[in-house]
Length: 72
Image: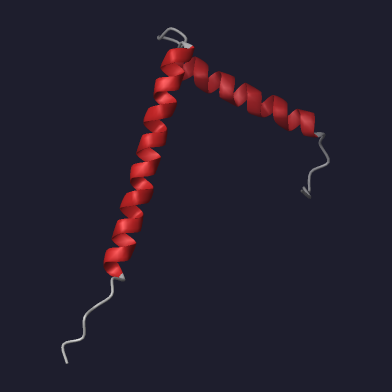
C-alpha cells in the first residue's frame, strides 16, 4: 500500500485506537461491557441479517432478469 504521508504506521494505529475508544466511551459508557455470550449472539444476528440481505438481493436480481417465455 502506497501512501502520500510520511508518518509512521503506528501513528495511524494510535489514532484509530483512540477513535474507537472514544466511540465506545460515547456510546457504551451508560451500559455495562458486553459478555462473550452477548457478543456471540450479536455476531449470529449480524450474520443472519447479512445472509438475508444477500438472499433478498439475489432474488430481486433474478426476478428482474428472469427468463421470459416468448408468446409466439
